Image (cartoon, rainbow, N blue to C red; front, side):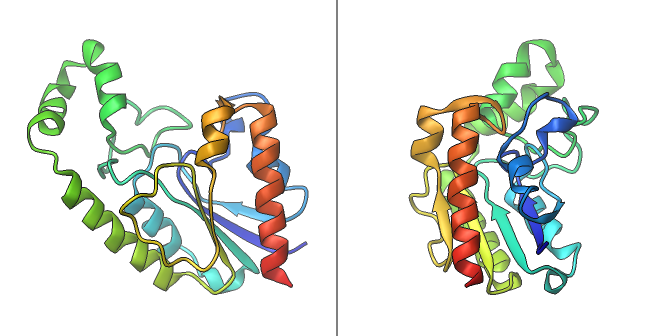
Length: 197
């Protein structure tokens, strides 16, 4: 079996550590020998660090799942650091607001997002990270996302955005229903095979 390195956020993480079932990542393990470094809730900076932690030339293919530019890096999340799936999470506004009533230590974080967070700056930094990731990846790398990609770096040779699939098939495994995971799996498998020809 060919060796496939996966880096990224929760879209590509192995949710079976916490949830019963099979996501598209688990389905892909039927076809490839997978090393999966993806972590739920991580920022683009942590995705870059995942790639830097290994020698990507030792893999036949690489898959990188990109995250939101609005996720801010922290070394240790104030809420999720002990959660087996989300232990490497960074800060996201919607997540902070959801947990704010039970975690008063999140008040200054919420205030930062409300008063000081700058979208243009966040997108600029995100694009610098995306470019650095692209430069680090070998030729046979598939980049994926399931977020709005407006104003973001668009120079990946192989790129799939599952935003429309995500809108129709939201669920509890890798953010997708069983049908959604199957759609994602089939599209990724096809793209990886095409890259390999």
